[in-house]
Image (tube, rainbow, N blue to C red; front, side):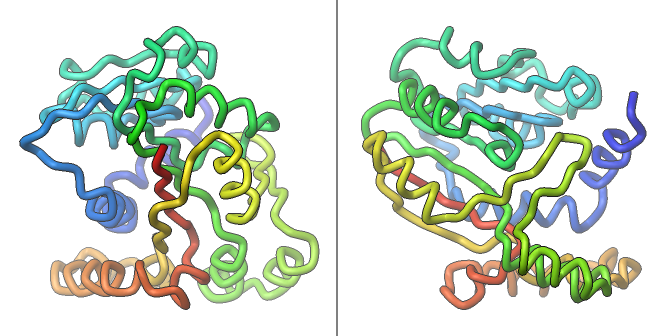
Length: 243
């Protein structure tokens, strides 16, 4: 098993891994007293599926067997977990889901339009599609500040982001592209948030284990995630579409 997958899994147990999901779940703000049918496509280690399984009907689909082998065991018996790709979405009931989650997936697939079409096809009328995507300005900021690598930041600024990593070649596509493609499928952008604006910019990881730091940083992330100037520099953007 590639060590990079293990290292990535270990991030989930660190404060900067946990905060990503703490912010994300607050942005989605799902009810706990009204069960929803949820599809988590590209579920990874099933962090999101595990979180929502006690309150909702969750189907998690993940193409990477290595990631599923390291998935969270919490609530794993309470949701349906499927090893596979977009072909598994086609096997689900038509217009079956109230919410579809697709986080940090489209960057790594060449056929974004096909993926979006299949996901929109199993989304209920009035349902929501939640997409988290890399944001180029945020990647430039992280390279210059966190990594202290202005040369890499200049490369991103001049040539865009086409880095190869354990998931394949990353294409940091624009928000405008996504909104346009979603619009062709009858999906309207309802909300756009910044995600990971500040909490990963400092390389001082020791302080991040302090509860006071964590609570204040989480409050700061939530305070700024809906402000336009901070959305534009966040490492990720979280877009929610309505059908």
